Image (cartoon, rainbow, N blue to C red; front, side, top):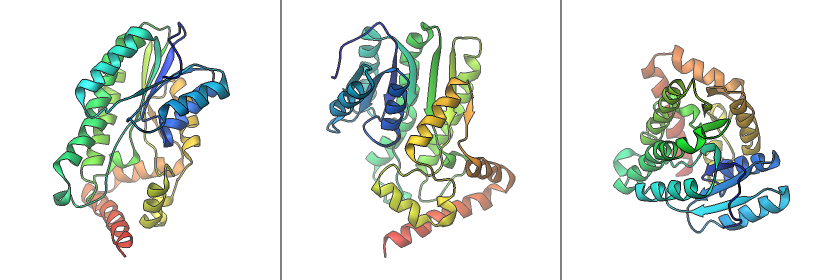
Length: 270
């Protein structure tokens, strides 16, 4: 843990040790927000928190826990509520995978659902009273452009992102007369790590359209979140992809997205 509590409100970011989560933490610290960083154990989260706090003069606290376990989510939220005022919650932690569904292990399927769906809903539920105590509160849920297109060989991941979109819009309407706003961002491809970069390259030109650095995704998402945007698209390719999936027949859209992913698998196996 990098620092102790403070009367100043904090921003909670899950999946904060790398990629987009770390970019969110950095961008918020640049703007003067204290941060609570959450990740799996063993990912040097304390070091990330220390670096952010030193570089930007803010407070940064780290919690390492496995959010696929419901008990851990509840325990973490209780710790945060007891010690910190929270004005921002960013549900960024997520998991996915690319393979034939029949070859997936039950543990993998369950972990994706628990992290992407259950942890998002429970963290929001448990921290919402804290957020509502603040003059202004913000919830940002990270979905994906793939939420608008069911895809073979990625059967579970897009389904969980559909949940995040539906959950976000429903909660936003429920809280419309409160001090808390709810936003959902639907990023396209991002170079989050070497493995993801390779996968995007293997999917071909269409998959690479609209690719953005994680730093840009974080900064643009936060800017729109603070403006109270309910649904966030980051660039023209994202908006066009979203529109296409509404215009073309579902069967054709699923066939196209599955073809792209199948090509990725074939290239990776060569």
